[in-house]
Image (cartoon, rainbow, N blue to C red; front, top):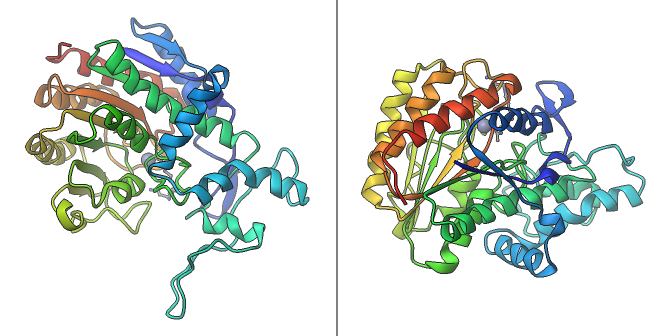
Length: 361
Ligand code: SP5
Ligand code: ZN
């Protein structure tokens, strides 16, 4: 399997508020290093890509692509807020921008403009406190986004059926307007925008198997009848306000959003029952392109998850997906998963199941 990595994804390293404690974010560079270590000892091919070293035209086309699904004011904030805070003496070079006050509902007024105060703006462009911004956040976010685009280019150029992108930061909680849940740019949306440059009317499927509901991805495609989004996630878990079964899409797109919340503490057998429903929905949509948002926070030891899923189960999960959707060109993007010591073996297990299934270019 071809696996893409950009060393600049390792530069972002921030803090979060978890429970009542401010701690180093669980979403850390060591996650990717652990995966690289494991895959380097396998037969998989790891290709290093450097957005940093590419031409201005490549960077401009990436920005243009991100702009299709992300707000310009938000992107400007991501790029500039750290320096602005720094210039105003609000943070030291080694510190982090974290929100103070979030947008809240009010009967009197819904804000449509970011607050003038740059300190307050951090809360306008985020929905939680696990999306700190430090001096390298923008560099890593762009490198991560570029991997999602590069994966699609590889699918087309190399005539392969699947590519894995080791995206970091992850993307599925970002809706194009706000950062949250360690996500700053929606990488899945970028892969899909890139696919659509050549096939504008393509039918696309998204299978989100991170432990958390991909509220951002759901939001971006909620009214898009060509994109079928389905997610299996912990019921009543983060991000708390989305992921219910009654969120089914909007307008022409009703029926193209399928949420499958699963009780906390569920076993892999229970998980597989939900997976069957997800796959039935995807098959009915007949996608020509499949995007898998792959999170390993479904792992039984994960501090942010609560499913009873083990390393060998990821092989079955991948085989089940690939057997039901053989030959559909697929990009697999890394989302969450926080037990660093098990990430490598969990990914290898997944890849074994995927590659052992029917699939030919
Ligand atoms: C990409 C991704 O996996 N983001 C997840 C971010 C979750 N951050 C907030 C977690 C709050 C956890 N609260 C305790 C739940 C223990 N079951
Ligand atoms: Zn997650």
